[in-house]
Length: 348
Image: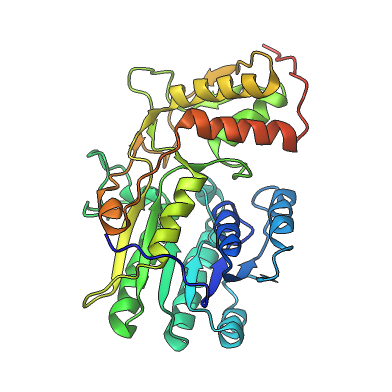
């Protein structure tokens, strides 16, 4: 393990800075005294007010500069690299979501392929110490062997979103090989927490509850063969990224890919029951979701969880937040942020 602390003398460019992970990472770097340049297009894939709330919490930091823009705008990206000369780039800007990629494929090519290409080109012409970029656990597709390991075969993605993330890994490897760009890809596994993404299941379930609507669970109501997910709390994710930032890959091809997850899979129903309990605590009243069970959706996979051995060996990373603790923090934040003090009447 050769984990080193962050270097305050360096400039960090965070794309997707108004996003969930981008916000928390930017905040951590700023608290440490690092100079952060944030870029985000603040698109309306989900509630823009939440994105503005995140940015509002970053604005008071003197070392924070925000640029509203899109990574698919090559001229803009080149201009940012020219002006700010970032030493470290963390590319978290991407169009997320598996199911949305079936409905709206164009934005995935624009952001995840063209946008990432622009970042690579900028790193080529304005060399950086380290490029860290978001991949996804979805690259494992319908692999049956779990836990997923970085050495597993990942050439059978089952969604366009997964294809774009696998493409990012291939593109980064090529640029690293050709232009000696130290690059690290992160395969994220179901990240959750306060100020998270409203399109994620736990957030959507909570929204539905307060709207007095049933939640849909895509597991056919099969509790024995329930969906397994590697739910990873945001603080743990940020710690993993922070440790990796200062540890660029070495060797002939300076490119590595790491799983960044919890290595402790939970059944979806256990996660849902825990969410009910934590919301009950936050509301000081019993909370129970009205549940509707449906077949698994195209592009979804039955089990996703990570082997994090490689990451632990590289930087000593081991997540420590239990789902009880993490979901309680989410529930407390949600009830406070949306001012939800009253339990709705659920129509059955």
